[in-house]
Length: 333
Image (cartoon, rainbow, N blue to C red; front, side):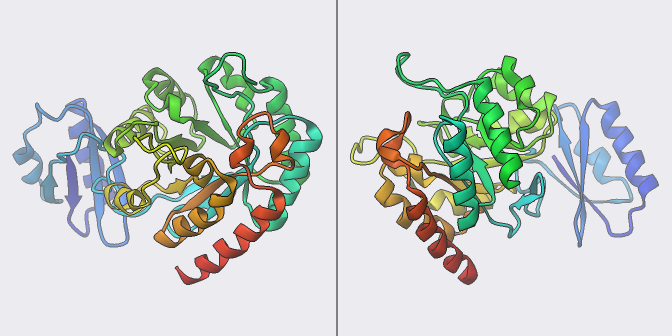
């Protein structure tokens, strides 16, 4: 339920309304915009009479939200959310490019790539320390050592780091991580979403599941937000369909639709979407043109010998050219 207040409502009146809602076991979340103040009601509102709220002097309108996601809903929060990733802003007109290798392999590799992508204009560094792999025999990541090397690259370059959390038992290793990624395979690991949401206020980069609908993606974001963390970034990386020519099927139209449905920023992953390094450039430019709030691109100094996803990884030289085109498009849009 959304409560829009009349202009001139003072803090004492707002606090009184919040007390009424709290007494009905509803959590009030206040959003103050330039033109209006909105209170979003989180919880079971079935037992609350909207007429009781509408009768209050400070209340302009009361609207029930039909969609199952509440906190992630644009009706709940009309303005774009701007997520602060350790000084790098994402959303609400702020654009960010996250770049780096699929997996951390060595100090020389991750520090070298971090320096090169920063020089090309990347604003955050990605790198997998824990890797979910289809085969149990494939490289699973360096784990805690990978986190340490990411932190070293951060010290060398100043780039905030983004890496994936697979198991909540490893959360203590993520103290120096700036953005926690929840990967496509864990998008509907609801216990993990709740644990992360209640444990930290760090930004969470939530990747769309391989067969997830947009509503399922937004409901997963809702798990994090309902648990106490409002700092969620949605990531569109394509879904699995009958088409096998590409790694996934990417519909860039969902960027526009997600912006209509939700206030959360949306980034696009052209690397996982296509699975081919030569396609990343054009898809990154297209995603930028359609209004994505950011990109996440895989970059490796030696793709043929990468331990993970080399085929979709750009070289630093390719990434530099992509960034030139992306930044030109940003000047237009």
